Image (cartoon, rainbow, N blue to C red; front, side):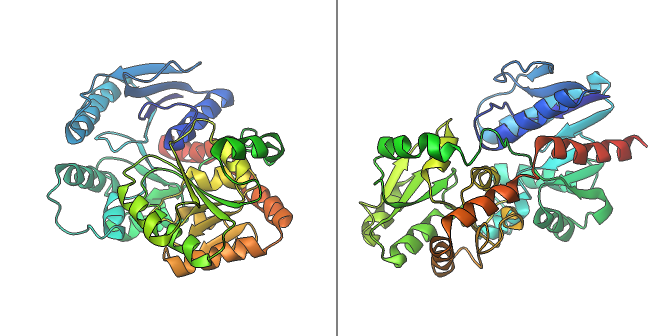
Length: 367
């Protein structure tokens, strides 16, 4: 089968891009696929995969998005592909993988719904409507049951045209044994107290992912040995002011995103992602695979794999009182039992399982 995957440039060390890398490698290992990546000029070579690099402007973002969509459409037309699978909002694809969820739902969750003046938002909503109403795609892949329901509710997409295929995770890279390897040295390098109960917040998009309410929850626990590690990219000014107001200056460590994120999980006692909107953050699976319990909110796709009180905690809302309750649940539980349950909950989520889920859709579209 000649398969095109439309995606942004990816590496093997970060977020959405890492999940794409794992999937592409699994497709190559599976065999039977002639895979082309349709991407931009920054993509490095990938063994066993053809590259069709598109020339697109770097800025502004709305122009970059539109030019990428137009260039990808031309590349698809010239490629004679059996199936075109896009991980980006484009003009022509057989399958759209909604890895970033639904932009309309995101705007509503952030209190920015209604008429949009911002041209980037307007373009994304226009592309999204074409895709989810099946004028710009034949089938939708959601990465969580919550995401599937969201698309069907907001756009009236037939349920038969939306399939859930969960992401995979590298179960070797993210492993409980990393704790023994790297916990002590990573904590020392970060300046985190050896005996602190360390909560890690990993990811950019601080407002969407609930950093503010998490900081308030940590302060509400009134425990001197709780330490918060924030590893992400974004404007920190308002959070630094919140840190000072809450008296957390000695309890928070700020670092930039790191390629060796597995070491951060090894150092942590819990990972917190109490997001207002999150289709299914890879952080959920990476932390669980590392044997680290996860605190998430009921508004995330990742809550579908976190068992409250068993492998972590699911806060009823992304509000400080519910987040604090979830942190207490994790802290008061047996750490060894939580670690075992966390790892077990991640083990079904392999890249091979993700490929099998997609193959069912490929067969459906080729029938």
